[in-house]
Length: 95
Image (cartoon, rainbow, N blue to C red; front, side, top):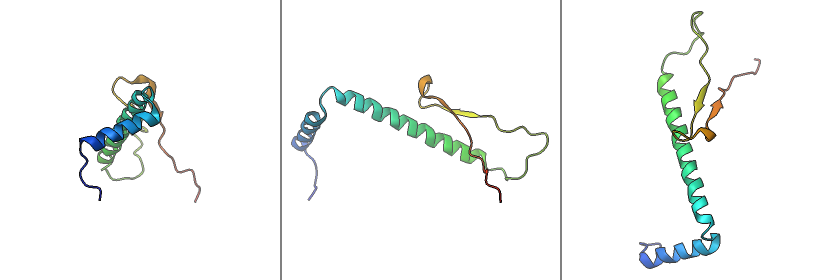
């Protein structure tokens, strides 16, 4: 039913999108979509790096060790406006 999309179908889809959203909104939408993709990619990379660095056995910290420093995740290199400090979750429940 939904076979291959040819050139006429793609052109028709693009025309409908332009009519729905307007030519002025499309660049903003594409920019925000790209920014979201960069943020998602950097978050996934940070989680992957964090997972590989926490391969050490978990246990009580040694008296000589310091608490881990607060880390900052950036959406894209050089994008200072979207960098934010990340606080690590702590277990505050009393059991």
